[in-house]
Image (cartoon, rainbow, N blue to C red; front, side, top):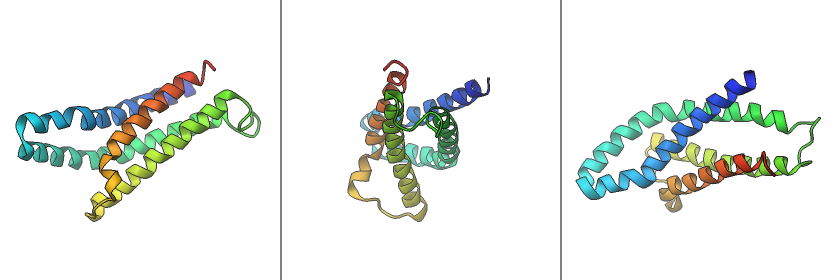
Length: 144
C-alpha cells in the first residue's frame, strides 16, 4: 500500500509538471498570436510568479518519490544493470537529471535576474520531449 501511495503522489506531481510544460510550449504561444505580446507578457509574468512557488515543491516530490521507487528496482540485492528494466530505468534517470539541471539553472536565472544561455530559451520544448520519453520508457520498463 505504501508503494501505491508513493506512486500516486509521483504520478500527480508528473501530471502537474508536464501539464505546465505542455501549456507553455503548445498553448501559450497561441495566446500571444491571438491576443498580442502585451497580454502574453502579463499572463506569463503572473504564471511565472505562481510557478516559482509551485515548481520547487513539485520537483522535490518528483525527486523524492522517484528516488524511493528507484530504490525498489535498483539496489545491491537486485543489481544495477542486471535486467533490461534496470537499464531503461537508468536511461529514464539520465533524462530526469537533464530536466532537473535545467530547472535549477532556469530558477537560478529567474532569481538572479540573469540572462540564460541561448539554447535555454527552448528549455521547455526540450523538457517536454524528455518528459514524453520518460513516460514512454516508464511504460516499456514493465513489458521488456
